[in-house]
Length: 176
Image 1: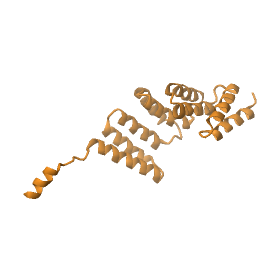
Image 2 (image 1 turned 30 degrees about the vertical axis):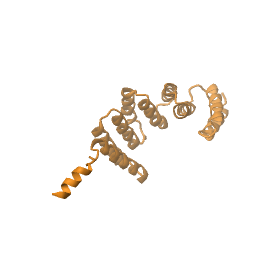
Image 3 (image 1 turned 180 degrees about the vertical axis):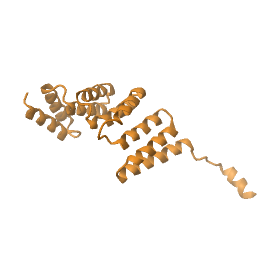
Image 4 (image 1 turned 90 degrees about the vertical axis):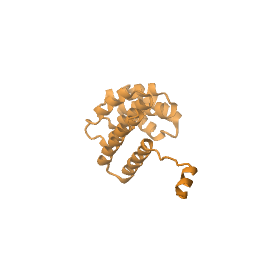
């Protein structure tokens, strides 16, 4: 197998994604025909199925194959966790989060952020807030920290929605 040709197809797919989906798929199919276990091609195929086709089962398959091929391929963990959450595979998502946090060099802030997302999907709002606060401690840029802060405030609003007082109650208070 000529790895230069394989790399060319993968790079062409990366360049075309997400704007030229037909070209992306064509190059990914060529790349996977040269090497069926190419982690980057499998990862990109999983992203394509998750984000554009909406076939989460196929996306899960491609992400799992990419991780089986290269366990330390950090880029796979983030969309794979999201796909598992979107597909209501919460136990599987929790297992992947638990493993991902141990991967050397992974962005732990992002993993803790996804832990918070998982807790929120499971309706464990207080745990979600704690996970997001932990994500904030691992954050290294203001954009990420601002995003986490907005998530925390949004979840707090879910827990304690503002009570709307009726006009009658306001009038009664004003008369007294």
